[in-house]
Image 1 (cartoon, rainbow, N blue to C red):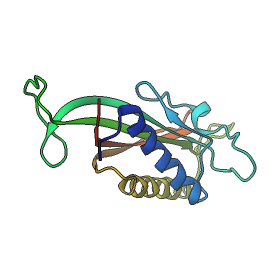
Image 2 (spheres, helix red, strand yellow):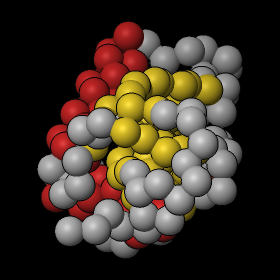
Image 3 (tube, rainbow, N blue to C red):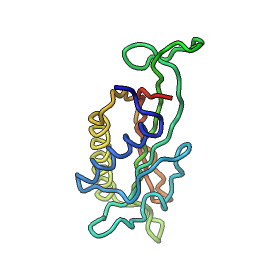
Image 4 (cartoon, rainbow, N blue to C red):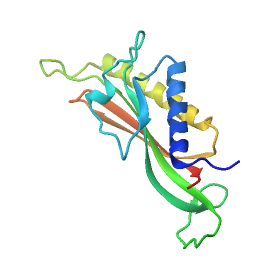
Length: 169
């Protein structure tokens, strides 16, 4: 079976993540591709126009980081000239999930530990769902790293999962 093209591979990863979150009643308002990393802010994490029963908000986006020739079972970078030599092409993608996070109230008081603990638990749940969804998404995948970014002033938090998959150009 041939590897998918870039857009198909990325959209497939996004679809797997969005379906897994939805199946766990943690659905998001929007899912799609971005050119480069998404802008993280309240518009991406807090608005929820996805209908009745949606109380988690957020969005899932994915972007292409780089494409390179790869050799080996799956995706060892190879910097040699290719000159039409058949080889595997690897693509590094980043999948980002944004959600609302607790923020300071109108008096400038930061949220209490109970509130931040509940948010943290939800973030960990989302991250586990995303990892498991990506592992079961079909194509062989290499996980490179995950990172969490929070903007308490803006009330938005995000985490990214970076993966590598084989693609066809």
